Length: 255
Image (cartoon, rainbow, N blue to C red):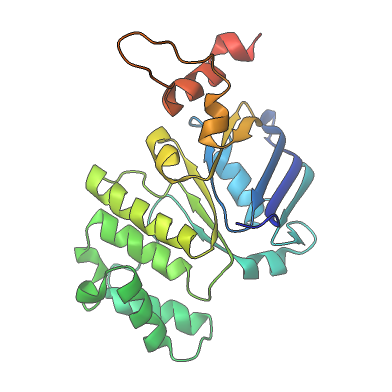
């Protein structure tokens, strides 16, 4: 991880009609970091990602990705990113390898077959590469989807609730894939409702609630928001779930 910011968001606002979704989001993601953006349904996580991916314009504030402004330089931003959304965007009629070759050709890469084979090996899909994607398990389909998103080596990857609807085994397969990506230096912004997911994967955790970031820090830093542990039968730190629920509880947010 370096000190360079891959993503910087300041004062971001967005409304849908009279409904204000983002009320002033501030967020910084260092290059090479894996940052989890936590929030309940409707908190605005996907809206933040859509703005960063240039799919939606903000009402106010600023946002840059890889040094490019999302409003004034959308083309440069798109060349710097890849977006994997909640449901795998694979063509189930094609084989896994054919899906990868197709994307490599669309990106006008040389030797698309070699690109596909390298990614199949990297994501442990070589044996399944000749099978139609319709036969893949949920975890395999999601790994293929992420592999497709990495064609062209984008420096920034958005994973918008990538394990939604997956069984526990498939979810852990995706976790392993995401860890591998972070280990290679890809900047990852992960949105999730699963607190365990953020706890296992993220270098830093930001909690989005009622349109703004409540806290942003490492798990250890978030833990320090609570009183010191007390010794009863065993010494126990608060879990991320307890931290999250305490921060977004009505009693705290209305205080």
